[in-house]
Image 1 (spheres, rainbow, N blue to C red):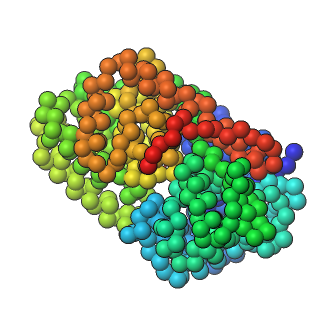
Image 2 (cartoon, rainbow, N blue to C red):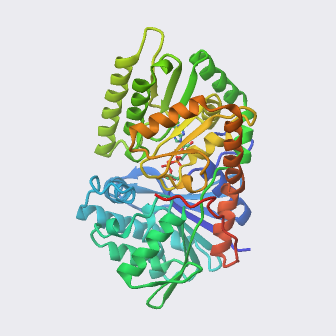
Image 3 (cartoon, rainbow, N blue to C red):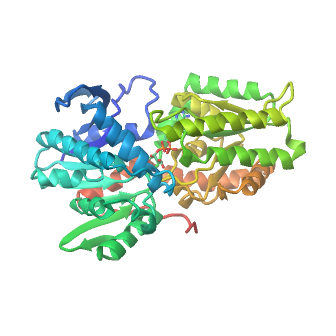
Length: 471
Ligand code: ADQ
């Protein structure tokens, strides 16, 4: 069997399986794949060094080998904080207003991709399958080819692929997209992002798209498909049984004192629609006086990418907004919003999800959104909570029985909160049963099996969206 080489910006070191770990689902899934295929996971260590040396730190834990490199400060500024997170991330989330174009970002991005290629190439054997992840490493495949690699190389984009009209605002967009033709397989989260990519290929590069998703540009043929990522449901259900999960469940229930609980869990990021969510909740309190004092909204949002200014700014606005809503509506014995800026281990989160009557997941744009799936997986089948989900999350293509809303509309958020809080148990069960089905079926193991099989050239049946969502 071929080995699998996974390459991503960051590498998460696997925890021993015996430890009651709080490792993320993606990391669990990739570690399992690497164990099965005897592979290697390569990426940045997260550490900075004065001068790039290309020295590889090899680590072996529980059957998985990781290989990491340190980057220079300038690399981190230009490649990670710069091109990846100040140019591509906003643009690919349709925030052209926030995208920054700076020549040094582009050159830093290319330099780091070259450094990745240069360092990982000697570790790759002729029959290895190579799987590159996400927007940090779009041109890596081409860099690997330039170093003589003939292996099958696949790329998976975790975030949306925006419409052609937005992509063309990126300086040198053709150069970036043409570099992707070096891959054998390109995967997206949903048919919608796949369609946008096809559109770009036809319009901008004069390529063709065949019915099976193969694109042809000049003499390059590349297979493309949607592979919706899922969560590790089995692992998630085990986590729910742990003492820490039960403790978190009780803590939240006790603290809400018989009130209905609404939960939001996100990295603090402008793409997650947190400001709009707070404003939608405020509208709900304005319009539904009878619910004041009877509902508690817990928003967990640990800061991320703090070195990027936009993230500081959104944090300030949310502090201000949550304070304003609390000032307007709170009583001595009731606080409408509990806004917590810290992350929680998976055990804690799963208990919080289960203790919540409503999961409020309202990104303005999201490749998939795993929180929505985690919320569904954590529910009690006999008395499940209700998921309110943005139409603009990739997950909406599969979870069409959630209450789907436009996250920009305060009115839609407000109405959905009211419907969710008042929904009869029979309807909650009916909707949950329809939601849990794709969450179970298209879980993270199915996702990586489908991608790796397609990369290896096997025929695979890809999951279909439950219903076309018009967005
Ligand atoms: P993210 O933008 O990080 O991921 P998401 O998929 O919602 O978004 O979350 C990833 C994980 O982070 C989840 O497992 C969640 O539990 C965890 N997480 C989020 N907030 C947390 C908190 N406050 N405390 C602790 N853990 C928290 C990117 C794309 C998504 C895509 C994923 C996977 O932006 O669209 O679904 O990759 O492909």
